[in-house]
Image 1 (spheres, helix red, strand yellow):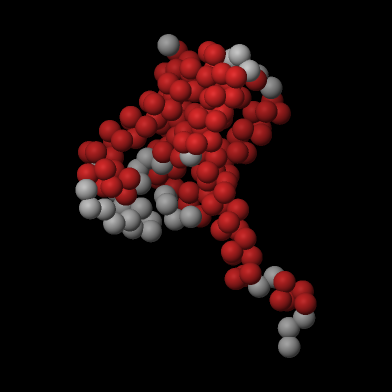
Image 2 (cartoon, rainbow, N blue to C red):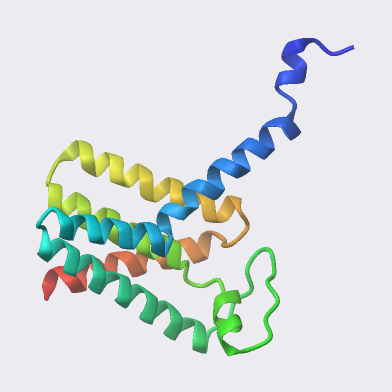
Length: 160
């Protein structure tokens, strides 16, 4: 007979909650949250930041889709597709969630110019990126591609 402590720490019991956690965390790299932050910046009068975020979003999407048009890589949990747009979505390289969250976090850390916010945004980017692996949407190479893409887009938007 199992003790209460043994019942509490059964792997299957916690797996459900961890999956829910990562499913919710991965949404931070999604389009809805991204646009919410962009509109919030606009609402508080930070027009330049909002425009930079919007340009970065568009660049991340365009570059990711361009790569996926010419280079197809199956996701770890293979996704079926029946047309051209579904094929682009079924391709995993680079991770668009990772590219967006890395770009947004670098941009916000640069905007706030504070070590504590930089650490916080780094943590957010890492946890969102890892959520993509945990949910079997991407592998480490896809994340690396997303990190590099997010950094390049930041460099482009900052240099312009």
